[in-house]
Length: 371
Image 1: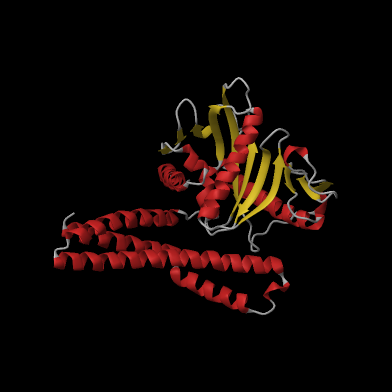
Image 2: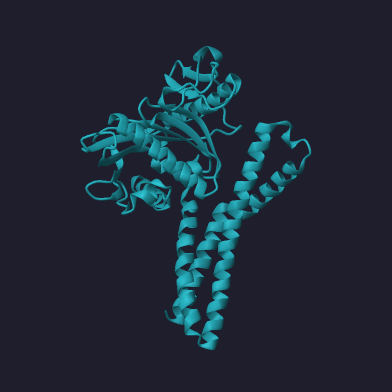
């Protein structure tokens, strides 16, 4: 690569980083980090455990985002110095290393640049994800569990905290449904492109004749509410049912009726929570989920596009947005963006960033086209 190419590439990267910094509002981020740092230092922080968890989690995530930006900015600066020294000394080996580093940095900047495309009303929020098994029997339940693990591994790789609210196990294997929150800035904007029907094709491990099976699962993503969001639910509009928590294979997890199911009578929205030890804790967690879903429903109805926020999916033939094919060949392909991976094992192990970035760019393109 010619020296002038290095100069142009580095200047372009610096310009892109400047734009990203403006969108992220680094000054506001630093101010919030400082404020949260003072709260964390307060001796009575853990008197309110729920607030303490929120504050420390928010601080950790914001500091991680700021560190990610500053470290990448430093890498670009270091690359410029390395190239300048290599050119002055005619060091071909260092120039070759610089070219490799340039490629890595460009990829990292592109990934960070995706953040600038997340400008929707709720994109900056944390995400509440619900997965439901669809058509396909026990294979569909197993697929739902595979998808849950996929998202949890993705969150783990990015060091995002996860809070599981409910897991409803199927009788033979897998999950009927699961609901969990991913506590990270912009988790909703990032994961909202995952909403829809997912389709799996494979040789069924549950078929003793070894036949190929197609199964479906639905993914719903809604934003987690903040205290400033107003959504009042009168007590008379909620039916509360308590029951005994269940585990895999139908086993009873708790010996008391600690699990809670809330039904919002006017809309029919039902949420459950069984992962806390007490009925009171489960009810409080279930209310968090219910309010988030009702807010999404309310906003979507106001804008007349429920599918955009909630994902109106049937988890069956004809409406899938992504295919996971394990037989007769191996590929994961998004039908909206055309993005694909020939390594399904890696995708199921959480390597989703390529699909997420393609989905976000595709959505932005669709929004511009319809504007």
